[in-house]
Length: 193
Image 1 (cartoon, helix red, strand yellow):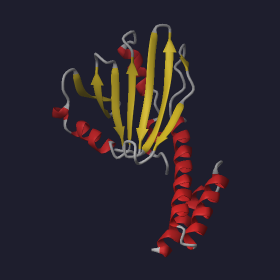
Image 2: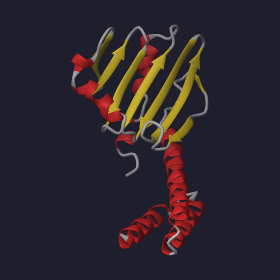
Image 3: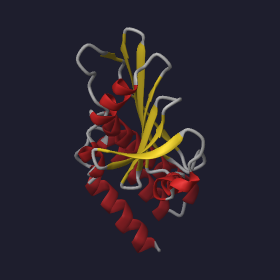
Image 4: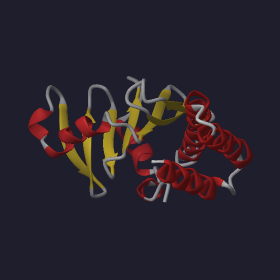
């Protein structure tokens, strides 16, 4: 057990030693390792949870970079990113960004690495689960759940990410689709590798 802990801690240190928060992350890992070696499991857990939280924050920041720039003639707010611990929604990452042009408003959100996505992925494999005005369509080779009255498109990427593009009532279906097509899905497919 102790060997597995040491190997895991060493791997985490090696993987993230070159990132911007690496000093804080490695400091927390080292603190957790020292506490573990002394038998202080509470302090070890707190320190390693803190390191994990910092790593998730870095991942969420990277996820925000996948959100597209505004289409010509549109403006965009800064991307917002967040992480959720295992106690909330089973954990995961989230990034979102809002776009405007005149009366039109589009928002894109990406939720990733959450156990809740497994249940969502079933809707993409079993269209019978869809109801009302939602239907499964294909856009650029991707299975997409389209809800016309809600002006929204949703797709799954590698069963790890749920991408949602939503417009308000003043937003045209063409604008929602254009933003959907502007997303760098290849970056999401290789995210974290």
